[in-house]
Image (cartoon, rainbow, N blue to C red; front, side, top):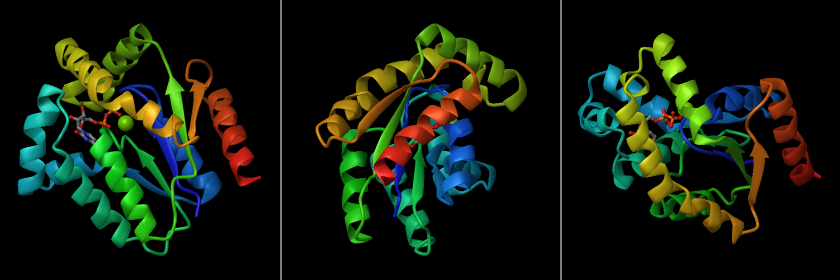
Length: 192
Ligand code: UDP
Ligand code: MG
């Protein structure tokens, strides 16, 4: 299996690049943000609980997100591989993911980190907020809180995956197609 993590701060382009990569490599896309928004739209208990965190720009508790990913993977046992987009976001989530993949007799192939500076990210998120209707993209203080959460809880995963020899940073500013080409070049090195 080819299992990719698209890593990076809010607004780095994880969703955009994932859409292209999953077609190229025939992978299943797991965006935990999209799954949480679908739960919210369906009005489930999980969705309503998650919304309290999303609205504040805080992370949804590990057990909730891990359970959702586990269910998704069990529903897609035929997959050739997965793209994890916006997950894992904490060290316990990364450890749980390693364990889940081990149960599938597989592992993470590579972690691709999209590198974008904070000024550019804020601009992109506010712009996305104008068309996406996402409330958490329209309020600058919520956006700043998401960056805080990223710095404190998610960025340490860079070291977690570096110590496994799996982290590869990629410049995330520039033309979408050029960034995509850099990502593919890194994946193709792993595929050999
Ligand atoms: N979220 C979370 N855990 C996840 C995915 C999403 O807690 O695994 C919540 C969190 O509140 C986050 C929001 O959902 O700020 C939006 O996440 P998404 O990944 O869609 O946004 P992005 O960070 O890519 O802009
Ligand atoms: Mg996203």
